[in-house]
Amino acid sequence: MAPQNNLHLLPLALIGSIVSTFIWIALILTIGTISKSSMIAALGAFGVWMGLTIAAGIVAMFTEQAWVLNYLPGEGASGYIGSFDLGSTVSAGPDSLASNLVAYVLNPSADVTYFKISPIPDYPYYRTIPLYTEPLSLILARSIIVVAVYIMVFMFISWFFLRRAEVLE
Image 1 (cartoon, rainbow, N blue to C red):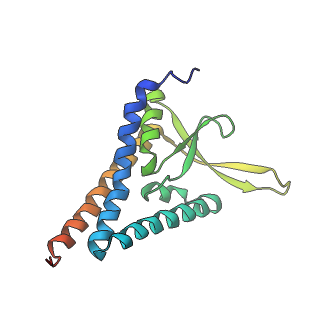
Image 2 (tube, rainbow, N blue to C red):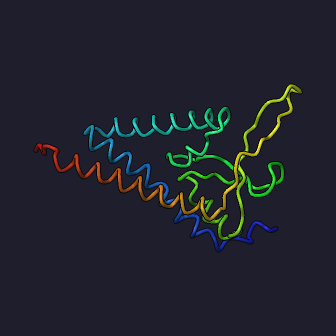
């Protein structure tokens, strides 16, 4: 397949990236409105991002509860269309909205299987244990809903605190 085959999907990926970025913009606005400090807003959002990124890796690797990551800002749980070895990777979190839109257009009836990697005694080999499978359309719909809910909640909180803020000249 030539690299130019799916260039018509580039605007869709751009729109998905912009919309999923609004979660972080809304979070920065919320923290900034509450703290009245742009530095705290930037550092707070960066801290939330770093904390979720580190926690997501730990949760995904050592537990079977990676589905929780699909409802938090970030990449979410990773699954595979097809097999673990040969399939293409799909992340189910809100930050993956762009790639999920493109994957859905290319494979509308695809199923995504999530695996847990479990070490076996023959180190360095690992055993993959399938956890569950869900349709790509469900992943895309959930990503869109989660993005919309986060944006609305963060913007409402910002509006609430901004209305009650004391404006100094």
